[in-house]
Length: 354
Image (cartoon, rainbow, N blue to C red):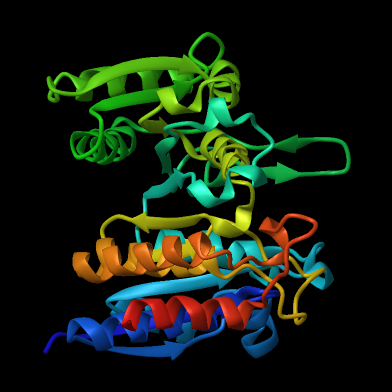
């Protein structure tokens, strides 16, 4: 029997609530498919500051390096919005990504047929939407130096090297080979020298993939394409800041941020987390949508552990639960009954084991 250790980092706000349901489903999948999962919880974000004065405590950092995969809930808390350095919850997430060398963020966007009503786009624009955003995660403005803030001046640096661009581009092209064979690379090469290097490097990498088509879009036009003709996009490749913005825009296609998963992969254990934030306004009320976290658990099974059949089973269970009419408040019609976070998690776990 294969045995895996998962470092569970519930984090802040609704993070513990949705992570608990993702863990429930992980154990259900392990039971059905004959492998063993041990999940151990560690603090991160504001929870890490409360525990150790650090948004990525040393105990957590040591544990994630030794785990087979990492499942994260969310980070962020209003009480620390003005915190600096490692006391800022988001700093713990950035440090975690760097620690794991998780340089490629995968964000699939698939429309569930039962939720067409939840999207603000017309049904004809949603037909056939199935895209994958591949976002570079360790470079650009979020990590570039120098950076500074004074009373009247702020500086951030957008910086990329050829090796950083090459490695994430290969992730995108490899993914496209298993999909519809098309990569759309996003930049701002008409203005930014960094984007000029990005475009040149992606073009060169693309020459090794004769079976994959490549197009380049400026980021402003890419944003328009995402809502005007999203079904035309297969794999969307972009740098860190643009990817952060475009992936949240793409989430609107599905009707709720609460539905979308992500996987951050690279040279260490993978990091798997829902796209949504900590949502402190609804924390503790038991109404958060756990499906993004559960879908992230499916990505953990697929990309982190190589348990592909188990991943397929979890994804099918999510689709079945939605098709049967189960809804959290964020995806329900005004006249539809709603279920709580735990109830949805229990339904998915039951669908996995049935």
